[in-house]
Amino acid sequence: MGQRLLVRVDANPDIALGHLKRCLSLAEALRINGAEPVFLSLDDKSAKELLAGLNFPSGFIDTPVNTGDDADKTLSFMREKNLEAVIFDSYSVDAEYLARFSGKKFKVICIDDLADRPLPCDMVINGGLGAEKLNYDAPRKLLGIDYCILSRPFWEPSISKGNADVRNILITMGGIDHYGLSERSMRMLDELPGAFSITVIIGPYYENMKEIEDTAGDIEKDVELVRGRNDLYPYMKKCDMAVSAGGFTLYELATLRKPVIGISLWENQYRNVNELDKKGAILGLNYSDGASFDNELTSSVRRLFSDISLRNTMAEKAGMLFDGQGAMRAAGEIRKFLEHG
Image (tube, rainbow, N blue to C red):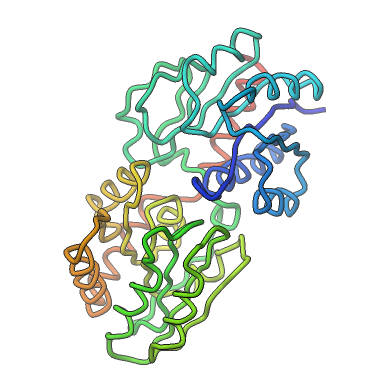
């Protein structure tokens, strides 16, 4: 029997599905490496559906990470399941919380993006571009894009040659579209020439469905609205360019060598977007309220759409950065740590 470990991660309308999806990808790699991951998550409909689809043992509780009696419930779950280690993926984790687990002699691993607080754990994983420059105190550090944890279809992606003309543009804003950027982007794209189609990914927590549907019906371009799909690989592979929020979807699109306008919507997305922009792999924007942002987005959309040389250059630079193997590398290091300490 392989090493058994807990993955403690939540999904909900505030944080969407990104953390859970990342942990599921790592868990698949851990399973291939002989470990036995068990999930404990906040009781959430979308989280349950996602976990059920990959057949991992899982439990659900009514308290988010580091809220109320979550630590006691998590410790009780670990003892009940005879688990020896725990992976946390949450910005709510802090030093006081982690001490509850390390003090019980559990091996503690943290997945992080921000490096904005002490994380006294045994191993920290940050697979973001430039993460190797960040300051972590953990004795074992897996930092930088060599450890970028992507969904399984991107581990060995099929790379298609880009089209000279843009035939399809993808819009994806993550699990929730707080700022209505799906419909705003559609209207901008509708003003471009040509007969290309638009694909809009609808996240599980979207509150602007009516606005998206109304816009899709109003504009001239053909629009496909994609709901209820956790595997976005086919839609990413199909597109010739994309407008995307700044989460790990950017890294997945880069792995497929797709030209992208990436938008940082939250603090945890800022480094992704700006580091990829510096490398010339995307056109990066930082979201702000007001007409100035719409003007910036419109300008970027028109520039990327009209310049095939720019699209080809971005695709080439993106492809040089990512090989898709980060989840397997991280899982291999975790396995060695669990076996040998």
